Length: 126
Image (tube, rainbow, N blue to C red):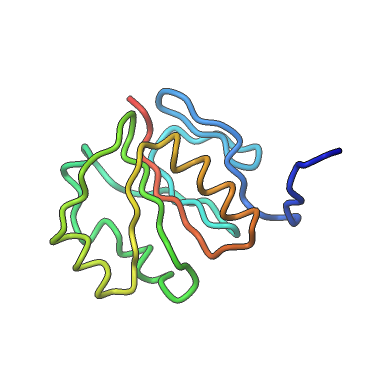
């Protein structure tokens, strides 16, 4: 019995990740990205997870009406997301769940396959 979920055509699926790169729907990326079911885009952030600011989430805030949760991939290991930043984003309609990048990629694929309104903001593993 085939248990592979049916992914509607045109949906962005994360096919792989490794040190410094991602492969999404056949395209390779070597920088931080934001993945939604309909598109993958450059996430124009600089620096480390601890350098993230509220303004780094502006693109996601603009999508807040179309997504229920943002899976924030923090790199090789899970990181603590500052409550002050979490609260500021929540006020803009952005709900963030932080986890290591691998877990964020896998969770995104499951939720996207279920038809959930999800986005993944992914920092490469270094």
